[in-house]
Image (tube, rainbow, N blue to C red; front, side, top):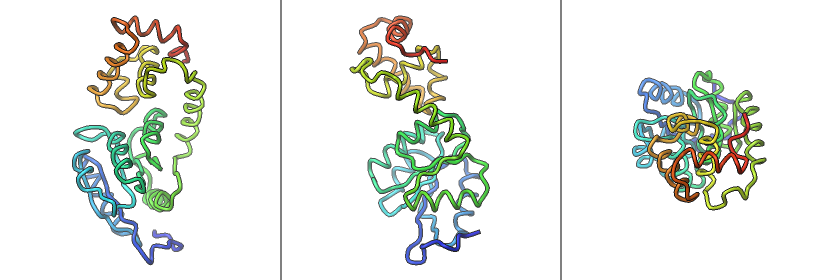
Length: 224
């Protein structure tokens, strides 16, 4: 199952597996351990553990999006900021555009849906380690459409908001509640509440309905 053309004869690809489901994590560790030129350097079941065990010697992190103590998107962002050469390959049950886009924006270089066969996993790990960007064909097509729609959003709309706050406001204006926004952006409910609160403060509006009116007047939340 190993790739005969790998250049890993001089050095192994050091991989860390971050997933809070022990059966899946241990299964992935077992798979990677059978592949030529790969070494499982660390494993973690939470954001805190990932930040503790992933160091500059790790080449690729396989990252789940839903961890017991937080979001894999946030973990990805923090790890990439800490180790700029690190490659993150998201491995998740989520197939929606928003999870993919959030992961890529956080610095992930690949996105694989759980259920991929061993050959796909191996190819993805080797490609990401080699500096390539790997996205599943189906989710990639939807993501490109999503990103194109995002780029059409007027960049000067509410310049006082951060990109993430503007993204949250757009979803609020579309009628999503905090729980739905949390799932779509793969953020903790507390983080979403904080973003909504910041948006209300920065826009100087008293409540969510007033924010929706302001957002829709500015052209947000109108696409279906």
